[in-house]
Length: 308
Image 1 (tube, rainbow, N blue to C red):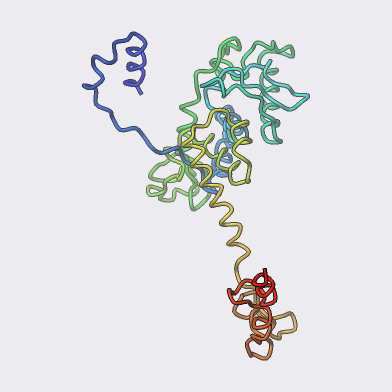
Image 2: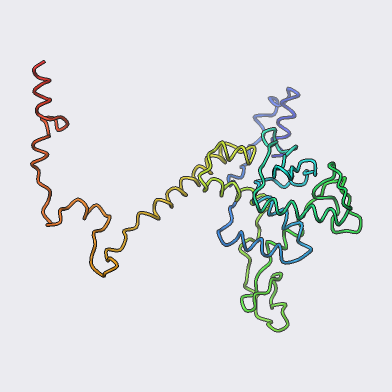
């Protein structure tokens, strides 16, 4: 990425061609992100909501999972971008021009916004300036500054993704050799979190994956998520295909051949449905009467064609 920036600067200055053949092309990451497993999303949110000091990380995670917003877009949110009556938010600044968009707020996202508004009122009073940031700088300290955006939530995010449940008592805690619960003290040295190493940007990837699995069109996904590269769209098209395949596989299983009265019933499989009840194959008389010389038309039609 750094080489790419330097290349664009030199191309603008008409100097790139002097060194282009000498600069090796380093391999780029091909992975597009990670989606959470079905049980990981509620687990992650439960852990994030378990401690007051993680509340901002929890709320920003809820917004990311329900709006597809990037971390940089969330940090730049101001109260003027919130339309509480229309239940929408507007992304004014993004990675690209395509990222500037209006996103409807579902129930979870709207609840998170209302909770953030109550926090802001508690910190700065009832009159919130539209120019203030939704996530103010240095929140959690003695003097947060709403005129500056939050720098990040990296420390809380790392602790949330690494946190584990004690298998014996269920206490949420940091990885350790023994459970922090004085009444438990179970050995948890080998317990690891399945979300350890999860990037915050992966929440955006998970949200778009859920949109794709809901059979949303590419146009709908791009309207909600903003800029999505062709490679990403191809990936989500694959996800969408797998969702369709799984849906069809769910209805392809042969139902039980035993009725409510305990008697055998006909199945849905073609091996049974194409046979008569007597077990004898269907008569070929109909085929002989209707089939033509070429197998596609009746003999009468073939004779009429020959007459012309």
